[in-house]
Length: 113
Length: 115
Image (tube, rainbow over all chains, first blue to last red; front, side, top):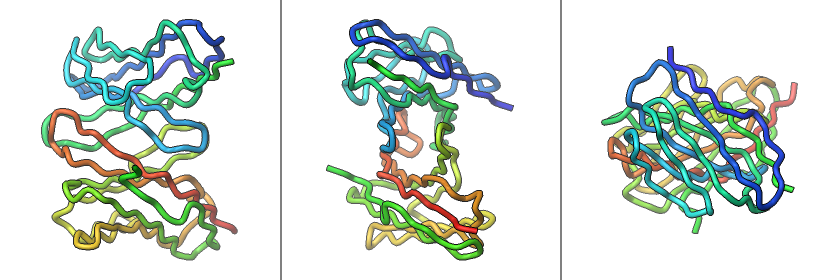
């Protein structure tokens, strides 16, 4: 069975500090991977997606970047956090091809002070 | 511009009643519509989904009714239980089977089921 793990579970960071969030998928080879951001009480906004190692497409510019260093790993990062980066970050996966169902991880709660 | 709209913003029903959550969209090219259930502090879980070639989809106590002409759909939760209390998101995609599978989410409906 496939499992999706996100780390850390929660993070409290200062404005201007760097950030790195991670996501690992086990049990599926070559999945499509996605990063989403959700404001408290708000909707989900897709940030990035990747269909293969080394390839990442940006959907929304939020002074964040993403990388896919391995088939099962997706990293979200920034060198300088803003207050507006606070929220809930969710990683999701889907099969490639004609499978659109996306499955979400448990999320990382980020608070920027 | 909100491409996917949900109503009501919040809904309270009694245990055993059918909860009806509504969703409408603007882009006629949308062809895949999943519904997600999210509990506080957790990631959303895929509940049920429908493609635009169908007008109804059932799975357990959950039913989607889809009206392509009117560009709206609804999720019916039959025999609601307190454990169904959560936020429900409608989403849409016009990229089914494409390389990005971009999902656009609605603003959500907070469902509360009272015992």
